[in-house]
Image (cartoon, rainbow, N blue to C red; front, side, top):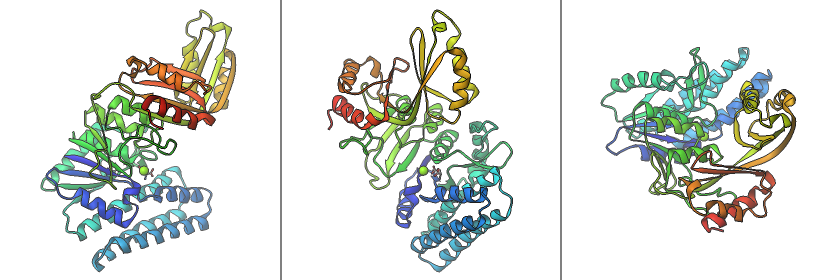
Length: 440
Ligand code: ASP
Ligand code: MG
């Protein structure tokens, strides 16, 4: 069994959806295909939810009508026969009527989750109609029957497996299954989701649950690149990464893969392949247990970082100081990315300022705090990079004109991270591309 996940842009145009159908049909192995909503849909649904939350029904209805028009145009190009057109029209009607009805019910967060779920429900059902029209045998598996999260919003891999296994066994002659990414049920049994971009997570969880031979993530670039192609001119695809390397890259800003999606595949040792729908025969990137080689593989950058420095003479020779500081961040569910300490000061970085004021107030008793916003973490990732000769030398040489604020080295063997003011990001990525990869 293999899992294939297609993102919003891969299904966002009728001709792209046709291409997805070609990619998933044929071949010997059984497949579970996970689809995102058509590109733009989830954003539109978020806006509809926001209008509903403000009780602006007219605006919400306008937004619903606009989205509905988009789907009507979409199916006209997606489908050929009158029978399938009628089926698709029925599906569109059902889901958009549901959205309109929701407007009349008093708004709540759980209702909002229902609104957000419509995108994946629509994309999979319309894709199923197209497959039907093409005579491609398949079964549509409702994700809401097996995907679940607990009260802490954490996916329940064991339960997912326990529900999915008999469901698949019921259709033992079927070779092709289609299901929704992103959506799930929560601890109360309500419709919920795995957060924005969560379809990758669904794919990885499903792949882990069924012990798939591979979890393929299909997007519109040929795998993970060694640097951000939007910022540096010359980048090269990375052929192979270990799970640890991929996790560091995804977490530190490489946009291609959702960071949470690594652990389920890693836990069950299912290789993840990043492939390109525009160039299906390209090698892409394989993420698996062991790294093929050591040395620098890629650079990623994460913006919107806030650095907090806490200086206190009381820290001198004291123990328990770091714990007390970390507890403040824990209390406000704010995760720390980088830490550096000296005998009398500690610097940490966070990527969310939503509780910054409260955190700073609680840090006051520990010393003087200083905050620097608009910082960027640049991560240089590669297997055993920390032990690779010359890497540090090359990094610092490349950065001789960049005001580096923090350096994190030695926490992981596969990562060296630096913190810089965001204004220096372009310069930093370009200099590192040259210094580490010899690419302009
Ligand atoms: N449709 C959802 C989103 O846009 C999930 C996904 O695409 O992965 O966030
Ligand atoms: Mg997406």
